[in-house]
Image 1 (cartoon, rainbow, N blue to C red):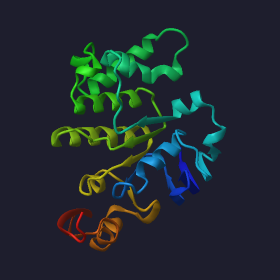
Image 2 (image 1 turned 90 degrees about the vertical axis):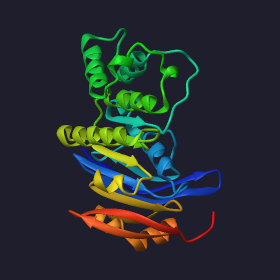
Image 3 (image 1 turned 135 degrees about the horizontal axis):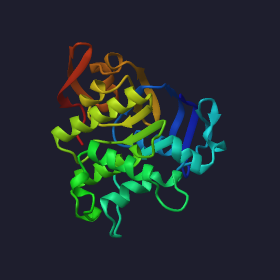
Image 4 (image 1 turned 30 degrees about the vertical axis):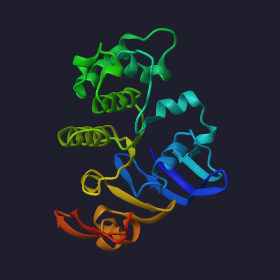
Length: 258
């Protein structure tokens, strides 16, 4: 499985938000999008999952354009975890996660559907919340439910928009370890959008740094996380320390006032 993006442009009305995006992610590989607010990370993920339609360019899964893949089939192949999701309707955690099996359902959930959901609830330590109303959970617990829903789709590609949002440090590490394990063991291709410049290189095979809707740089973590790149993209002066080829960022000062 390989996801490839070629020459992608996207506009909000007349404003060009993404310009000439070219990248690819292979089987068992995690690619993480970095960049300041408004750089286009979320928009790119929404283009891949067909929430948005690009102005031009191609998005391909194993050489086939996603625009030619039926919605139901695409839902089996791509699992999408948004930054957040708001719902005023009462629903249990079990039902919220079971929705991820929708592409496989005919009329009623099968034994396999319930087994897959049960395994994922256990994996993410959500079993004790299974019959709780989703609206009663904390922000971090809701985030884990969204991730669980994507995992039960048994996707070949996972798109995760700030997967550690609203999570404390322990659960951030726990979620990223689970994502990394799933990607490596099942050969999934994953694209994450993140803000944390220290967690991203630790859990990514490749990094893409966006600036004003364009790819500023792309490569291995030690190639992308440099003081020069951070200064140019984030307007922050930083020192980079490397341990076992994993860069660690210590920010010193912002170069412009907010």
